[in-house]
Length: 161
Image 1 (tube, helix red, strand yellow):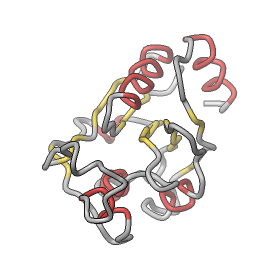
Image 2 (cartoon, helix red, strand yellow):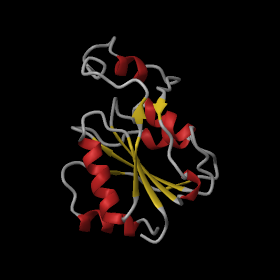
Image 3 (cartoon, helix red, strand yellow):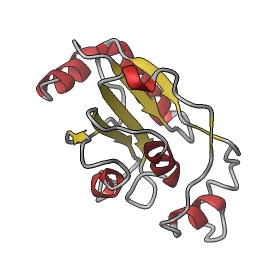
């Protein structure tokens, strides 16, 4: 990849982490983990419990879980791949926190996700609203299972970056 790229990701169980690291390695990008200031416990992630932290966050469109740490040198990245698991057919609210924490004007954002059973749903439309109108968005991709370097590179090359 010719442009300076960052793969930023949130992973609750490690699945998205594996996909993000594979993508970064395949395209020669830097990696940044989006880490919640308050880590999620197993009870927090129990989507069957309407009172769990993740359920409460996902039921509140205004929820913005706090993030620990910042991306160093964000201004230097031209392309930012943003990865996350699908929760309730969209990205976890912490991804919105991440996108609202930086100015993506003049940058290209490419979402990718992992899921045990659903697609991207309406998540791209939700996430686009977190960035300025001067942010370029490219179509996202589900990265479930192991992805070969070749498959990942072919996908990114097909984006025209």
